[in-house]
Image (cartoon, rainbow, N blue to C red):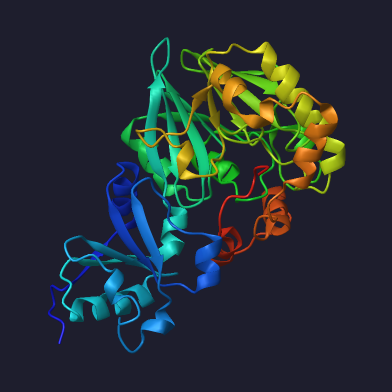
Length: 378
């Protein structure tokens, strides 16, 4: 009989802090192997094994010799139910520090962790919201009590709580482009908080709602800070980057730390690959090397800085990022069009949701987003 104190639980927020702090963690993922191989928790000091729930119904013999004797053991599944059963089985076998992750990978996919990137020149700061289970990155810029959010995720509560806690009046919710891998919360957040929602018009030809257009060289004033729009097509025809305070470059899904954006999610790879090259090899070349590149996604934990943030100087990326160092245009086109990962889950439905063409309920939205980020060329 398992005692009442044998099984502990841990929230995804608590687990995320451990991952971002690079703690040594031992995790058992109780989902089926196909799901595990497609998408799992990653971290610099994580040991993770896949032990499907159905293989452990009669006990933990299949994995007992792999379990550490003197470390915490964290068990995760799809939604949090199976992990409790597996954790109980492990506790019954004599392991004392066993935790079931509340909400499972479903909750892991939705957690947002705010990290301060730095201060602005004339007061204020920029924060990166890391969606660690999905690889999505969004940003809040705050200056003199005013704010703007860029590439908002659909989970609004973390942003609303942060805005309230820091006494910020939200002026703008901006999207760098029409997203295809996750559902934007920008329009909904703008409506709730009385802000203006903005989107590049070349990505908005089919949208079913009103928005303010973002054009090249537009400026958005936030307190004492200026956000400048830089038209940067290639991932989509409307993709737009933002230079903030002449310190930060928000690249959307055009440029990542270790890769570059894929041009095919609207079925226009051959048409848009030239735009992608022009943005990376010409438009960005005109910008200052010391701008800190802050992308809308990251591909792997290897791109994460020591504080858990994702960012690197533009000049450094021109030295290190292979996608920025393909001199031959034909070779660039080949690299971009022949090294594409599988399409994001439900990407067409996500695009149509972001256009306002469909309004799936919350559970359906969760299902549509489940899985890893797939916005980059491999």
